[in-house]
Length: 135
Image (tube, rainbow, N blue to C red):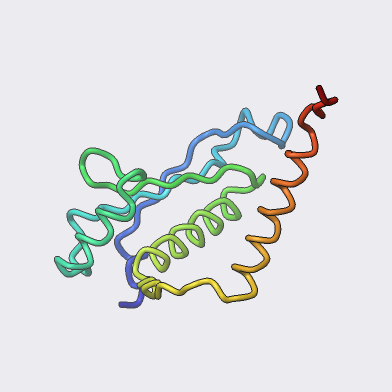
């Protein structure tokens, strides 16, 4: 699935943002908010929708809408571009399948090194004990 096709279903909103910009911050709506409805998307299959709902659950509203904001730049256009890149990166990451981990055993050298360190640590601690001065 080409994630750039999803941009046709994205809506943008703009608001005033904090941060750098001087008086410009108080006058111009530069904060970009991207909204994408996972539930109502016509481009996603049921499987893809389920994957997004699971992987992006902490970024979804109760209506199943994916909301991202960006406000660090001074212009509306720059914030819009940044939030769009962030959206595409998150969608791509959600759809990438992780390789399954193969269980491996530690090598002989690693085991020997661990046991040697354990032995040395034990000797070090044993040397801390009070010395018996005899009877």
